[in-house]
Length: 434
Image (cartoon, rainbow, N blue to C red; front, top):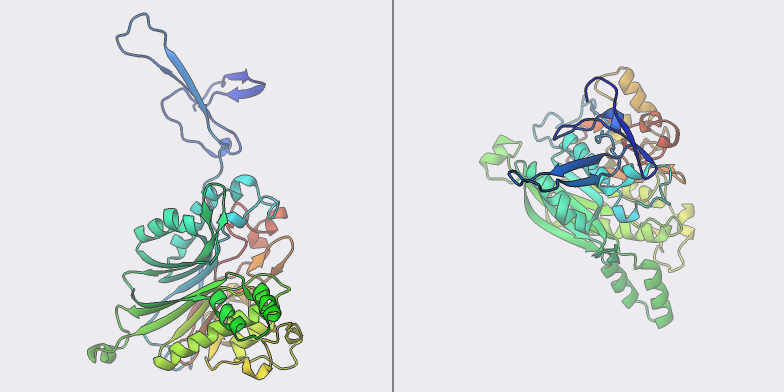
């Protein structure tokens, strides 16, 4: 650095500008997009007549420091909501991280290669998670090797413990076999793990196929239903019960959290609905054994108004729903069996039903980022081929109430031009966190 004219030299047809001649150099904004060439000459002290040994190394191109989106929590109005003043508050975040094995340049050609590179995205993701610092994290598309060698250690360092469930079939990723899965992290100073349940939808598919008599039909059922998706259910105990009387009586404050990633293929709506129904029936069994608040979070790969979304929020699917016509295996009949009794409410619909605590310009902006018909976010996933909501947090309304929501972005917040699609240099996944 410093003043004066910089020396320029040409090597192998490339122009190089000298930026400093000291032992260390910290890249700045003007270096972004350029590679650095480090020259060093090794001289052995006291060795007379010995030729100095020159050496050089070229770095990859300099990229900006990760700069995750800046989103705040928006308090919701709690007037007249019974029990809403209880002190037992906690935060939960759900986020599909976009596993590196799916982040191909062909799939995300709008994103600069350096911003799609895992070494950059992982730092941006970690900074974003550390900024929100929720009490519970439900993460999807956490690649198994990246859980082991990055997320587990980095989040443990800032106070989290983890439970992980990977999908049931691995793929070769160049050097080893890996696959993505669901990871649930919880702050060690807030919760302790009581129990975990691992849900493999393939096991449920095998049980269903066994009940089918004909071999050809069984094969057809397995071809359609075996999709490797999983869910991870944890029962956590709060370390500080909110109710002093309950604490004095030794009553434990438990919380059940389900984290899932439902099958993605938009053609297989019957499979999505069957997976979600299977998960909900499992949660009903837990609810029957204990009076316990529940949250169901994740990437459901189902848009608002779909049969799957209807089942989650209303406990049933109308027999006239058009998606029920896609049922080649007959697993959705009769529609009356597609029901559950968990009083689930979508957390972001609470922004519409309760309203913001402060009625100001920011609150009005957030209202406009909800669909007026479904009261869900306008989008949680935005790529070249799709813009819509796939991610949700549901909670049991008889035991929990939403007190604030993380601000929703609009298209402008995602960046200009091609950056309207994510991921991009600021937004490290093709989903947004809720």
